[in-house]
Image (cartoon, rainbow, N blue to C red; front, side, top):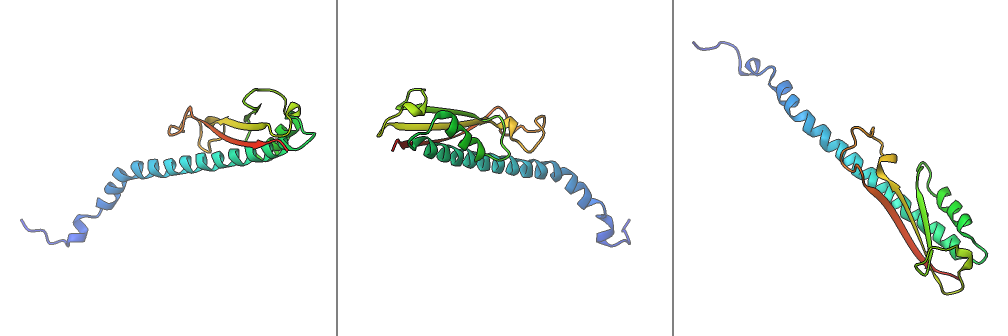
Length: 139
């Protein structure tokens, strides 16, 4: 028997069915792009904060606590970060550094604490620790 209906009428629900198959994959890709973008943004912020803290630590009269304050003030919206400072590769207060010593600042934060997505749905970078480093010579 030949249908008298047009071709468009026989495919009325096809677009909805095709979208239902593709939508989960599309949303997974979009969420992945958001997560990796957020990770890259936070990694750059950590590097910038480490650079600012390292610059503050290289100035005469500075201490580890004053440099840590500078690092934290350069990380808006990021909580739970860990700041480590070394002088010539040894953990000690930067106030004991002399001219020419290398001061390195490392700032790290677990990705789970800065994700925009709920921690239960954040599967892409789960368990990853982001960090930023900077090294400069004491003035």
